[in-house]
Image 1 (cartoon, one colour):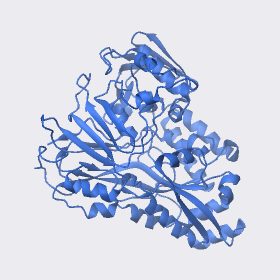
Image 2 (cartoon, helix red, strand yellow):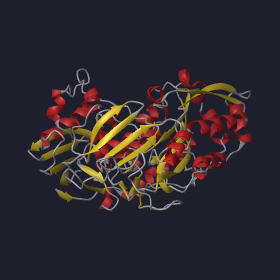
Image 3 (cartoon, rainbow, N blue to C red):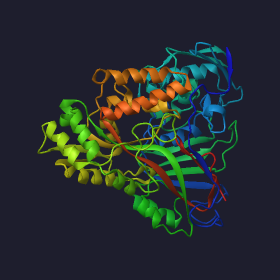
Image 4 (cartoon, rainbow, N blue to C red):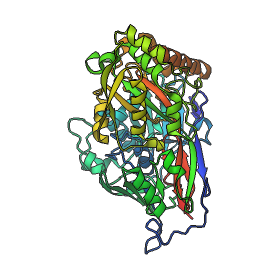
Length: 538
């Protein structure tokens, strides 16, 4: 057995930055006692965030939305956590240490004995066994992260053994994510949690309160209005700095901007680059962080849904028709177009896209495919969302204009967030304008875009459509040698571009985050966005 407090992965770079006042504008002299986002009458501190809320549940077995990844880590502890200061990026959390068998298939975790849930119960190995198995057995989106897990068994009061079906070098990175959150299994079962998809009714219970052991407690949640988090007074780790955090659903970026300038909110998550440039900087600081967020145009490979986009030449035509420089200008803040699905910041990144706009070549390809006169198609879009300050609709309008130059008429089909997510995940759109933030800090995450994998299937891209790529994907998922692993990721990108993969990546963005000058310790990470537990008021 090998004693392990490190991660057996290829070297990878994940961005994490800390801002302690200042930024591009403003001063640090604001106080916290007068405005709506300051201290209440009892002297307790309060911070208010304005964002387009894509979350709809806080059940660890179901949560998979981007902004939920910011909330869940402060409600539920995982066995391990991501820490850029740790070797390999993975550090102890609920598990104090772990060992890995020589065949890399068995992981034995030793748990801390002082981790207490909000219910007052000391969490133990039986809770871990129930929680992880429930997530796996319910089979919703988060279970994809555990597809390589054979079993999770409590092998002692504070010892858990996880066995894999096959080698998975990224498993610890996956286990740092919110799907692997641990809670009071007894309380969950008392409120409908069975771990059986046919009978488990606990989701609504989890949406009303939290029964984990994180630095915050879910106080209240009104969908499409606001979420309130209260500091956990009995948290076993370093206490949070702010007493109450309120996340307000504000689906109009202009309203977010006005609310920030008035002092009604402390962070505005969805302002565009143009709006940020015009902010009143007297009480606002703007911090810029690199991200692993990518924006892409999805084309459905099923002829009955995608129609012409099932043809590789049509997809290639789209690749050559887009104005990548113009799209990067819309995003602002130094956005670039990566080679394709592996972002700058991950091992195997090949640099910027090898494709440049060539309208003549695009028209040629359409003619070869039998569409010399073009065609009309539909594109699904979330109209009010601007993740990382890049408005979905702005990009959709630009793509529409670009494609009209080669005779393709794009009809924009706006859908509310929950409807869009259901249709996108069900591969129901002919095309859609999409974005992706990694679920865990490893390039293995990006293999989801491969044929037969989770995101690939959202574009109806099955294994038999590209067997060579599918085989490369399998090799990369199991390779433990860092150099060989990186080489596989590089080859995957080359073949993905040659095949005109159905998710056409056109942006990797930087996030400009406008904050009240009253905030300090603004930390941002690639997978979990703002670290809510670190925020403080100065």
